[in-house]
Structures are given as structure tokens and as C-alpha cells.
Image 1 (cartoon, helix red, strand yellow):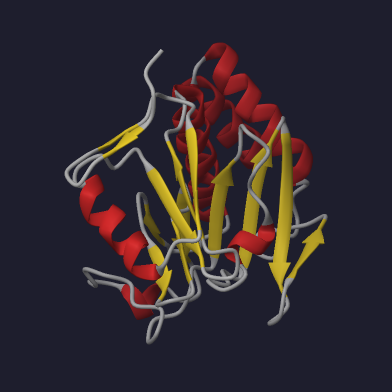
Image 2 (cartoon, rainbow, N blue to C red):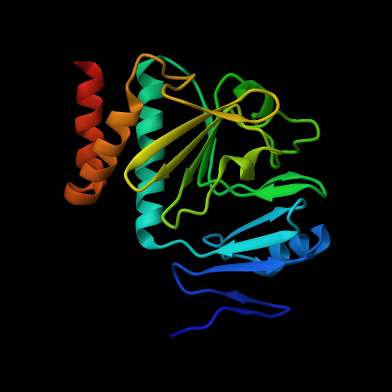
Length: 214
């Protein structure tokens, strides 16, 4: 068994590990981001209300589901004729308040406002129109994103798609997506995520695109 370790120069977690550091400051969070260096697979988030830093090392299934779910979103956007700009990995920050790293995020209506930018600064730039979180450990909550405030948040957990809309104060769960109101995504997405795991992502994506065209 490999034990989680953090030194001045390195962070080491085994796949599936999650480490919680309590009573930490924003500066502690920034230091860990620098320490991570090229280990982009590690997810690090900070919440000033709880004073907690969470460090997660996703399992391979996590990455597979995130990649396929993002491809399904892109297929939907192409089908309805929408342009987008997507990011993964990305660190979204409200200085001294919250830092989080969604598995994927999309700018749709606000795409033009962030084109060509090396960094997203939420003090001046809009939050994402859609953020996606794959949750294999049942720890993700919409409150984790409340300070960052993406317009819509998807949490995929235990073969269920949870959809949340931000109402300017908090997230409200919804049965439909603001971006894709004409599709029953709570049925479609789990079906094709599971298909991707069983028969392969590319085949599941092709089948999904055929369903959209039918």
C-alpha cells in the first residue's frame, strides 16, 4: 500500500485516494497548487468556509467517464448548432474564498468573452456556462461550486446525472438542462456512459450521435 505523502516538492497519492487537510489558508492552497507541478491528474480544491483543502487522485474509470460525458455534450452542442469553448483541466478561483477543478467546463453563451485567454480570472471573466463533475466517491456537492457559480452544474454519480441551475444565490436541482431542454438527459446520459464502459467510448458516442439524428 502506498501512503499519501506531501513534501515541499511533491504530492503523491495512489489512484482513488482522497486527502483532506483541515484548518488551512488560501496561501496553503496556492502552495499546494505550485507543488503539484505537472501532476495534472490530481484535483485540489479549497473552501474558505470550512477551511479545508481536498486533494483527490482519480481512478481510471473517472477519467474515462469524464472524457465520454464531455464528448456527449459536444455532440449535443453540434446537433443544436451551438459554438463552445471547453477546458480540462482548469483551476477556477475566487481569491481567498474558493478554488475548484471541475472535470470539464464549457463556455457557450459566454464563449466570445474568454476566447484567446491564457487564464480565466473570475474577478473579471464570467464563470463557465456548464461545469461537469464525475463523482465516484459520493463527496461532490453543489455547494462546492456555489462561490464559483457556473450557470449549470452536472454531477454524474452512481449511474445518475444530477442537474443543478444556479439561481444567483444557490443551486436548485432540475430535471432538465437549460442548454438542452428538449432532451431527457437524465435517461440518455447514464445509458451512453454505461455503453461506453461496456463496449467502448467511440462506439457509444457514434450510437449517441445516430440517436440525435433520428
